[in-house]
Length: 560
Image (cartoon, rainbow, N blue to C red):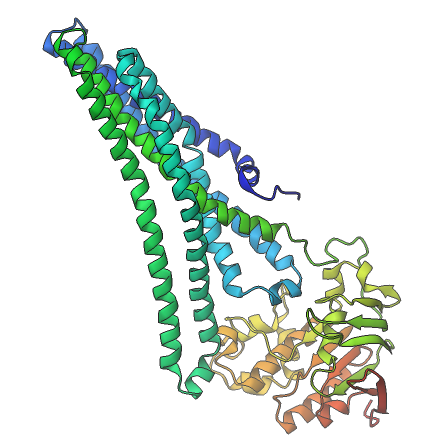
C-alpha cells in the first residue's frame, strides 16, 4: 500500500481509514460547541429579565438553559466514550500493521535497528498518534467553531470592543512558532531517552546470568538508573514547556477580555449598553479563552505527533524482504540444492563468499566444517533467504529460490539454529511451535528422536512443564533437544542443523545419531558441526576455508 511520507498528508492517510468514527466524534463535538455558545446568551437574557431590563419568558429561557446544559453534558460524555473507542481501534490497527510490517522486513533491517526502537514505535509512538487523531484532531473543528462563534457573537454585542480580539491572533501565532521547534527537539530527545531505557533493561535481562557471574550488578544498575534519570529530566523539561502553553494563552486571552471590558465600561455607564450585554460579552470573552488555549495545546501536540508520524512512516515505507507474495509456490521439495557462483558480503565488511559453488543431491547428508567466520552459517542464511546473495543464485530442485514465495520456501526446511529459540510456554507448546493441531503421539515421538524424552519423563508435569522465558528453566542441552524435536516434528524434506548437538553429552549425541539414521532417511540434510559423532551421519564432509575453495575431505563411515 502506498503512503504519503510526511506531514498532514500522512496523518490524513490514517484519518481517512476511520473517517466515520472521527466524523461522529467531530459532529457531537460541534453540537457541544453550539450548546456552549448558547449558554452565555441564555444566561444574559435570564439576568436581564431578572433585573427588569428586558421582558422575557422566564420559564422558556430556563427550559432552554437546562436543555443547553443537558446537551453539553451529553455531548461531553458521548465524545469521551466515542474517542476512547475510536482511539482503541486506531491503536490496535496501528499496532497490528506496524507489527506485521516489521515482522516482514528483512533480517538486515533488524540487524541495524535496536530492539528498543522498534518496541517504542509499536507502543509509545503509535499510542501518541492514535490519541492525537481522536482526542485532538477530531475535536479541532468544534474548537474552531467555539472560537469563531464567540468572536462573532462578541461583535454582534459590541463591535468596537470585539476589534481588540483579532489583534491578539498574531501574538498567539508568533508564540507558537517560537515554541514549536523546541517542542519537536524535546520530543525526539524524550523518545531517544525512553528507547535507551527499554534497550538497557532488555539487554541487562538477557545478560543477567553473565552480570551475576561477573558480579557487576551495581555497575549495570547504575547505568540503568542513569538512563531512567535522563529520561525523567528530559520529560520534565518537555512538560514544563507544554504546561505553559495552554494556561499562558488562556491568561493572555483573559487579560485581553478584561482590558476590553475596562475599555467598554464607559458605554455601559452611559447606558448605551445594558448589563445583560456586558454579562454576555464577559461570558463570550471567558469562553474564548478555552478554545484558544486548546488550539495552542493542539499546536504543541501536533509538533510531538509529527515526529512520531515521520518515524512510523519511515519504517512502513521500507519494502518487505524479497519473496513475499511470489506466485511460484513449490510443493514438497525433492531436496536438490545448488549454490551457483554465489557471492555475498555483509554491510561494511569485506566479501565473505565469492564464486561459491556447491551441489547437494536429494536425500544427501552433507556436513560443513571449517574455522569460525568462513561462512558456514552464512550459507544457511542465504538458503533460507534471511539475506540475499550479491551475485550468483541458489536453486531448489532446479528453481531459483529468488522466484519462490519465501514462506513456502521456508516451509521446506526444518531449521535448528546454534541458539535454541524457545517461548515462555510448555515443553509441548515449544515442540509443536507453528503447528495448529499437533498430534500428542507425534510430539512424544519427536522428543524421543531428539533424545529429550528421558528428561521430560522425569519432570512432574512432563510435556506440560512450563520452561520459562527462552527456556530459562532448562539446561543448555535440554533446550537444544527441544529445538531439535521441534524441527523433527515438522517432518520437512530438508533439515538444517547448525551446531544442533553442540551441548549434547557424548552418549546423548551418539544415541541421536543412531536413531536418526532411520529418521533422516530420504531427506536432504545440511549439518554444521565439528563433532565426530554428528560427522558420522554425513555422506560428504565439506571443509570451507578462508581462501574460498570447497574441499571434500571424505565420506560417511558407512552407517547409512
